[in-house]
Image (tube, rainbow over all chains, first blue to last red; front, side):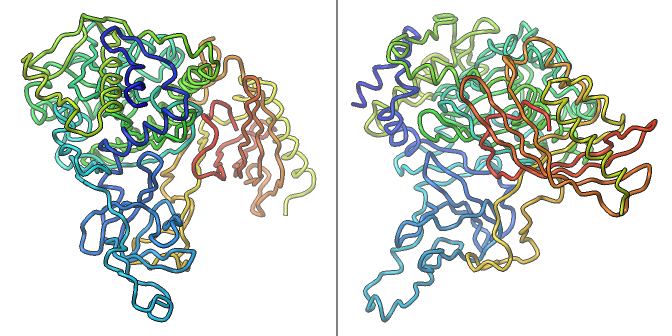
Length: 432
Length: 181
């Protein structure tokens, strides 16, 4: 089954079967082979800064509780009571020493330990091993520059290896200044589309901006960068399925608000020095960490997770972020730019939904489903650039990142374990 | 307590505004706002109250139980007259794909209540709304919430000087907010 699924993607020729966007069995296999194995984004440090702070989220369709325990250590657990499988914590966020299941009252500490079972002695006759019945933790949990990632697979490579050179590209979003960034607004909504459409779009679909988003550019919600007027624009993929759209080092991609533009001019030299020499070559404005975590810096500052909710549904959890060191008026402007640009009401974002929705729903037709998707733009014209540590297109539009995304997708769908999955760092080294 | 003429004039103003939106007369709609308007909408959070026995709170000082954030953290709209005008201009480009073909909307305004501190020139009015959206072939959305408007009398007519709206959802089930409220 999974070998057959992997065969639905022909990355050599840039062709994809549309079955992967609609068929329930393929979606279930994705939950097992992609979402139960990859490193997935959980939350940012600034969302749970103090002991007891918690938030609830999802990894794939699995409910997850991320919590900083009383000693200050961050943990992530299945948000599922060990007794009857009830969802343990039902609030979005809060601060807790312990969580008590609403069904029978089993109690779990903020470190995941099972601390209370009503009628333990009388009902269980001492035959219940509380030690082994704590909340089920994720297999691995790591933070990179304040971004918490987790995986359910103990065999998954360490986060830094999984990210590879993508780590530097993430720095250009979240480590531009001392103190990193903080989350200053949250948006959550449901889109009627397959999760891969937004993930591939943020990972390298520069091509759509000049048409899909032209109305927002025309009326001044963005400077030229998102209209693709920059001949310097390139698709860059460090491998492992990750991808970014980048412009030249001096091209401006910021929201067109005076407070933000003044701030960016002021800190430009400092940022470049902090990011190192590569920042003199390239300026990433949007990208996707495989499989479903995207970061955006052009027109708005947001990172978001595309949570799968069945083959035809995606829940977006989007966070407006800003340099922690930025002054309050700049943070306010960034929050407004986020709402006005990339949110459910965003002048850019709202024009994406119908397109992703229709791309998904036309796959319902068995004949339409047979029509292969063409991701051949720029095929054979990407090359590995050692200075950028990435595969780079030779033109401002290319589907080179799409091919990298689906190549990784197919690789994971076929692989029975991580040892069969190629590591980009090794592959890239052959070309460097 | 505002007099019945004031109450009627406010009701008629709000009903007319709803009709302008449903008829997609957005340029006429923009005329209903003052130049210094702040137009703002938020969604709600999903939190345990402090009295809940579902958690034992560790740090009471940090615990927030309100389902509305104080610092307008969850804003879905945060607009001034310039950005509202730009949003309308976007619809005129012929390329605003979220509204092309347009959504069909019906704004229902209820529970109109004028705050007691009303003066002849300025008042606060609360109302509830249901906005029905039909889109494409069979898509439907219901946007339900509350609105608090500060109305100011300018040259004998009411204008909206401040609009604060709350949508009663946590995760929005609509794919976007491509319409006005």
